[in-house]
Length: 350
Ligand code: GDP
Ligand code: MN
Image 1 (spheres, rainbow, N blue to C red):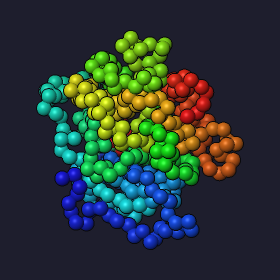
Image 2 (cartoon, rainbow, N blue to C red):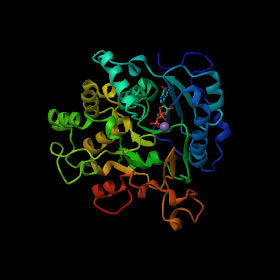
Image 3 (tube, rainbow, N blue to C red):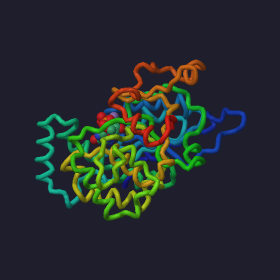
Image 4 (tube, protein in one colour):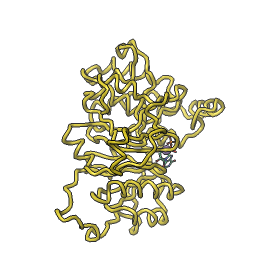
């Protein structure tokens, strides 16, 4: 059962009275939630991320938080996080089948692949749990029963920072503007982790041409105006540790067929396919490019990469943001800002 059964851990409902301060009443919430997959050992990095999201946005909205773990959350984790959130907090576990090698995977072969990738010093190349995490985000989180009532999610990772006030509801924005996938940072993937991903996508596009959207964003992920079959993947992806996206999209027939084709090929285990390129290629091919949204106004950092909105006059003078634009990843060679703007066909930011 994916919901933790211990009485003290089942849906933690906050005392709503504490938070009904706004004079015009509570804003009407979308069917949306934060989602954080996290280990018990990351409790303090998780607390930091929660604090940023609450301070910059959620203290005025009180969206619920959903914490998911491949093992039961400790009472310490629950205690240390539940009092930081201004909406309900729910703690769930990943169902076993969403965190295991499926039966068509040759475990011995997978283990050999991991050893080889480890010896080549490929990031997380030797780690089986990292592969389960990537496969979970690629094909399972949106089917978790605790997400069943929601249309949108905002993914939050431990150890992330937000640098700008978010004074509007991004979920309402997504719904009203008919957006499907929102991001803050684009990067190039390590090629050694996804050697056969693109050929697998090409096969999928031949088997399911009906799923490829006629007004797709192929130009973001393939250079030189080539088509899916003739082009090669330029490694550009949306960095998926921050995502605000539509669950209906992930639950669609198109995405389901896409994930199944990838999963059957074994690349989550024989290679080390990340959920970022998987989500990004799907978002680029299966929906109208107008449904993608760059949350340019969200100053965000995770580990080495930061997106800081510019110019100062627009985003900083008012006190809205406080990051240092000199450290903006957008202008670095790691970023795919150039490719994104090319795909958008303008120099616009979103
Ligand atoms: P990176 O950002 O690619 O370096 O990967 P992370 O180690 O940050 O993992 C991505 C997300 O998955 C984070 O939210 C982690 O907390 C979570 N995660 C990764 N591995 C595990 C795991 O084995 N168990 C659980 N519960 N969460 C994990
Ligand atoms: Mn991370």
